[in-house]
Image (cartoon, rainbow, N blue to C red; front, top):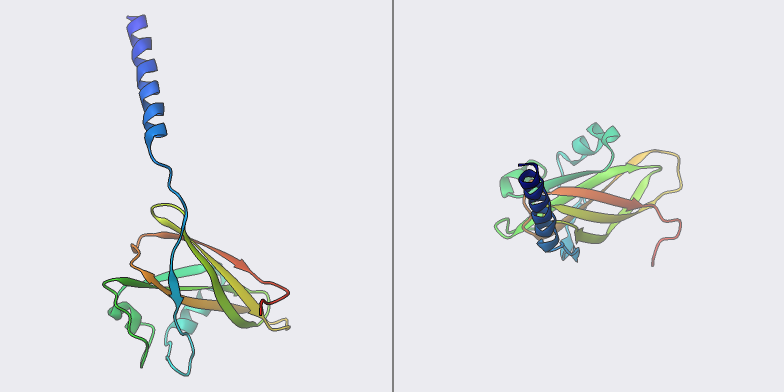
Length: 160
């Protein structure tokens, strides 16, 4: 009986290891995107400052906007139309060590079935005032339950 039990345990463990080995490994892939205007003279972002400053201590944040109704919670007038049946708007923001001047999205990568990495480069004014950076991108449809990691760099030299 002990021998049979041992054999069953070894068989179960071997099967579990072989199944794990047979699963395909996810390969990271760059995700195409376009930057979406956050210019205040073309779009009135009514809740942008609320989210930027009320969540100040929360670190880097990502909001996934998947419908016109959700977008209307952020804007009050003319904005570039997004086909939300095919696209997702991603709004990302975080803290800066000094005044914010400009943020550029330098990479958007899918790193697992449900996780993405957003890489942002933030240009700062030379002041001591703590501020927030923010960007928005439009990409192919993403599940609203997806997870994000945000990597932010504050380069001393800004690429021309």
